[in-house]
Image 1 (spheres, rainbow, N blue to C red):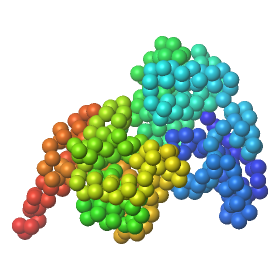
Image 2: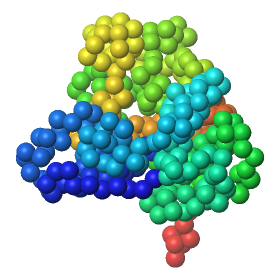
Image 3: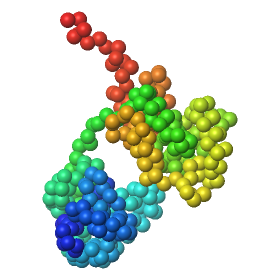
Image 4: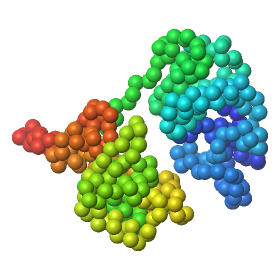
Amino acid sequence: MQTTTTMSYQDWEIKLVQHRGESRIAFFFPYIEEDYQLVRSFPEANWSQSKKCWYIPDTPANRLEHGLTPSIILNEVHREHITNFKRWLASRRYSPNTIKTYSEALKSFLLYYNDTLIEDIQVIDIIRYNNDYILANKLSNSYQNQIVNAIKLFFSTIANRKLELDLVHRPKRMKTLPNVLSKQEVKQLLDAHGNLKHRMMLSLIYSCGLRCGELLKLTFASVDSMRRVLIIKQAKGRKDRIAPLSVKILEMLREYVKYYRPTTYLFEGQRKGEPYDERSLQQVLKQALAKTSISKPVTLHWLRHSYATHLLESGTDLRYIQEILGHQSSKTTEIYTHVSTKSIQQIISPFDYL
């Protein structure tokens, strides 16, 4: 897919960008109040702090609306291939997130070869796409992996092509350590909100090691107060699991339910019966951080990492931590041994003997 630029508005640069693994139509322009109000009026317009631009979804209608070249709209045959690919993924019960990720990744590839028939695409074309588009645009390792996964799966199923796809290399997965807060920092963060609902959500993520999506799917049936466990249904990998509930968090939950009286989901948005919005939950964390002295770029997932690390430092067996977090492999859980400071702090530096 080529980046296409057109000047539809005075001093505006409009082009296609990759943002959070998806193609977007981005608007770059010097700040003028009238232009600022105009872009905010576009349907589904959002601000990207990382790219310093406003953007909207990359759809054929939006491209035509804002003057992008129609020829780079996915051709009808390729659109049908993507539709069939989505149906195949759905029939194999892939998760909605995976279906969206894979189909968007395939769309990016097919846009790049929009004028080429599927049967004419060879391995060298996939390698060229990797080099001339993904690497040239400095897209992430994870995005490249998504693209390669989608292409391999598409060609081996829908296209039914016998390509030597093993020649298409994946980038080596970066070995990074999970980001962890100290217990003091976690307490500071959880105590920052005066709003009970906001404090409750952040506290439950930390106290049970939850993923963001897992928190938002919780219902009354998820809480077993008699056994003091939280039941997480059909989490990542379509697995059910349980996490222990502390007495302290149970008391907070009772107070929260009594005050807010949710109807369906444990945490509901402005409309009763609908789950709390994920973006709003991100804002809850951002607001809490603003009230603390923590300068780290904390995300909600840091609370899950911190929970696991603090369990390990308090002597909890790795096998139990693996079960609580829902890790399929023990190797995933073992990474927390590299960030735990309990043993490292007991090592005396030779410098102290000088």
